Image 1 (cartoon, rainbow, N blue to C red):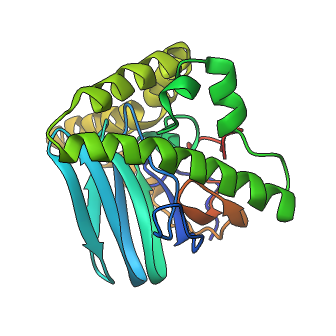
Image 2: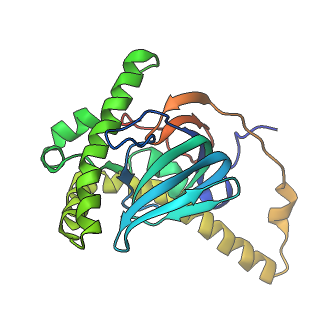
Length: 248
């Protein structure tokens, strides 16, 4: 079996993450806080322990993660994966993996968010692997934590102004990408829903022709141990899954 012929159910994307064990300025080990603007993302915990810290209209939350936990976040939820000991997570992503291929905005300080060029420089990692890439990933994480702590402190004090300003900056930063994302959505999630509609119509008419082409697929990671936003990442080159962008 191979994964060359069909997208995953519902045109979702997936990857596997091992949460970073680097200690941040607040003494917490974990990833780079960020949000997605049009995608819901889910963590399925497969090993270890940890937590995900979130900022949203609900305020600040700390959700424990342990094997069997499923936690998910709607667009606009800032999330920070926190390492508690060998934390391993399978990530399920809306829209063909778009969260790891462009739909992500880091919680950098306001002055970085205000300058698209400066933001891009801070968000983009060098190509390849090795100590140079790791150092850049750590700098990116530390800068995101710096801005995140400001947002968290304000929300915890009942002030949602900085969080709302961050949402405004995030929307501004991704605006030019929307036409490309719309095409990915049409080819992925929308097309998957429309196929189901056509199949339902066929079954209602007694037509089972689409069942005669049934088959099965399998896939192995196309890259292991890349530097993702939350940790070291194994990713898959599957049909309909967007190719990781320069920020990853």
